[in-house]
Length: 242
Image (cartoon, rainbow, N blue to C red; front, side):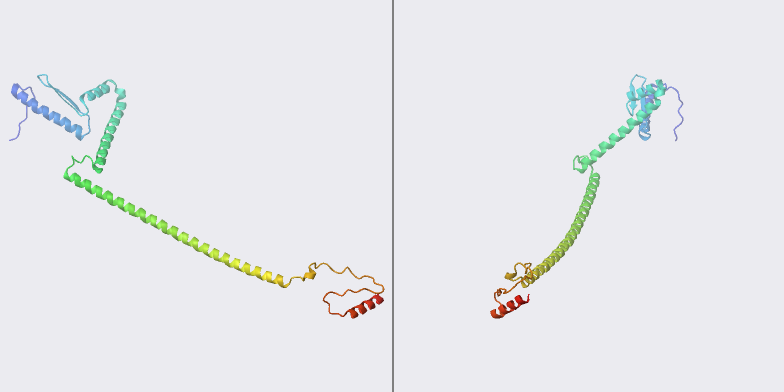
């Protein structure tokens, strides 16, 4: 059987009125809380009972919400500034929560504050650490391979330089050997064409013909094979002819 419609008027029965107040108060507080969470709204609720008791709920604090309400009501020009300020407050709160979450995650990755975590959360953390370790090893292997490839390139380059220097040294050695042979051959030729000791001054020559009258004294050259008498006769004849 469905619930009938309740007439909206003051309940005369004191006990029924108190029971209805408790139920509806709790429902109203619950709805206010759900509205603030689901819609990200700032909600403030104040309830005074017939006995003078106060019941309140404020998603951002009742006092803060009342101050904001007063500013909005008595300073309508500052509504835009207030909204912008409130947006900044919300953004700061979100960033703060995100920062705390990141710090908590970092502590978990370092092996700290693991007590509150459940078995499932610990398993997820273990998988994350294994994945990070695999990526770190993969990156390390890649860097080592790149370094080995660079070392191989340097080795090949140094090998080419070594070959070039070797060929250059061999060419210079051959040129030096040829030069030594040339110098030794030139020295032998100079020895073959050396001047006689008596011709130490090759430019020294006979001053020219001299007029001789009468007997011309002849000096026989040292080592000459011509007879002395023939030489005297020849000189004598030439003297008379001149």
